[in-house]
Image 1 (tube, helix red, strand yellow):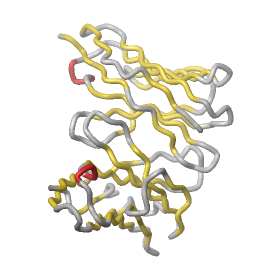
Image 2 (cartoon, chains in turn blue, purple; image 1 turned 60 degrees about the vertical axis):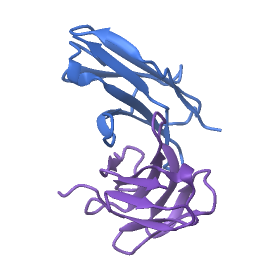
Image 3 (tube, chains in turn cyan, red; image 1 turned 120 degrees about the vertical axis):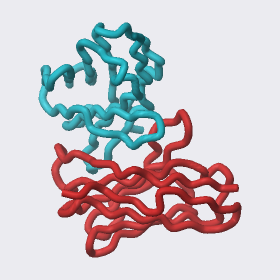
Length: 110
Length: 114
């Protein structure tokens, strides 16, 4: 059974601080990893994708991938109240299917 | 490019009825995936279609079925509705072949079963 694990939270972070979201996966051959953000009542939207070990930065967001540890994370710098949402980690398996974590609810406190 | 569209956006049905939901993918996308999401729950994968064939399937009962047409548009059908089928049904499309393909979501259809 392929699994993607996330801490359900809620994770509470002060405005302006760094929010750190973590995700582990069980399928060692996974090659593609995605972070989505979902606001309450809305559909998920892509934040970042990462395919190689190391860091990938896009504005205030940094994705980190460590395939040896089967671990992917998302850092949000200078957190804003508008970042309050549920963050979903997804991992694509060898059959093209996306395996989803249950999501981490992030709350940014002004 | 137009995004993923889903119709209808809202639907109210009664137990025992059946329902058909429709999804139009982004132009050029050949993969369509369907998900069920209930309040406070993550995405539950229903099935994925690629080039009119079901490529992947989740752990849902046979009451849930789908199909994909030659223009990549997809429909999902739920027969003999139960109260527990009340949920947000999300459709997502992607190009369909590369591991790096991004999946884009439609706005969802909110189904209420009374």
